[in-house]
Amino acid sequence: MKKYLLGIDLGGTTIKFGLILPTGEIVHQWSIPTNTEQAGSNITTEMIASIQQVLQQKQIGLDEIIGAGMGCPGTVDRTEGSIRNAFNLGWTTPQLVRAQFQENLGLELVIENDANVAALGEKWQGSGEDAANLVFMTLGTGVGGGVIVNNQIVEGVGGAGGEIGHFPVICSHEFSCTCGNSNCLETLASATGIVNLAKKYRKETETSLNHFEELSSAQVFQEAQAGDKVALQVVDEISAYLGTACSVMANLLNPSVIVIGGGVSSAKEFLLDKIAHHFEQGVFPTVKETTQLKLATLGNDAGILGAAYLVKEGENNV
Ligand SMILES: [Zn+2]
Image 1 (cartoon, rainbow, N blue to C red):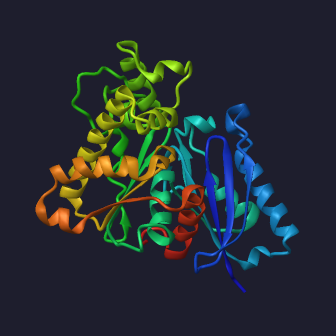
Image 2 (image 1 turned 180 degrees about the horizontal axis):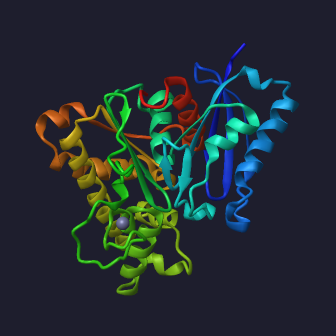
């Protein structure tokens, strides 16, 4: 009997797997390192081997798996079932992952962009509370986004819908983005951006941030909470950018919730309250009454849960 959803979260350093019940309960989860050697040419075969090995250990037959879902970086071709331009995996040319899963495991695989998948995870089992309209924003090394409107992921004509990280920010800085533009939201409000901004400001003045040779975004938040003026200036500034970005999205979409996750969000209410302050200044009254800002609750499990949900609900209607 078919019982389990197989959720896969393919990342640049780790591949996470989960056997998940249709109720959302994670029965078993495991991970393997991502082998990016030889342009990542062994990644798919190693994923397949790991799945075979764990199913054998657990004495679970492939016929008990309803289907597999996967969140991944790069550009997904949903028709072909392939991934390309996933530079942190070493994949530039299209990788026919769905066909390899079908051939070796006999499993149907649904592939989707990783931020969209995390958005689905938060919608299903996290702070999204099954909202039909939700925006997910992840603040990590970069800034990623997933937008769900009427229970459907907004993919856009080129598959790049929800690229919140590349919202242009009007500011006095000159930070170049990996996309080729300058001052994209992620050049300022990602973990990397926060450190770059803090390093720029600390040069100019006396601050506790000068006590750290290498600086992390967590240290910037820690010093801001301890009252360091320069650290606070950095946090206030990036909160303004994030709050404005959230108000633009909310005025456009009026979602039930904008969920904020990723490593930077571990600053929790300290960050959320500052973002909310700027958000409220920029939203239309009805939007202010109906769209909530919330912290993500699933952490690292959002990927496998969202990938399982892809299978549960079908590719195009989530
Ligand atoms: Zn950019």
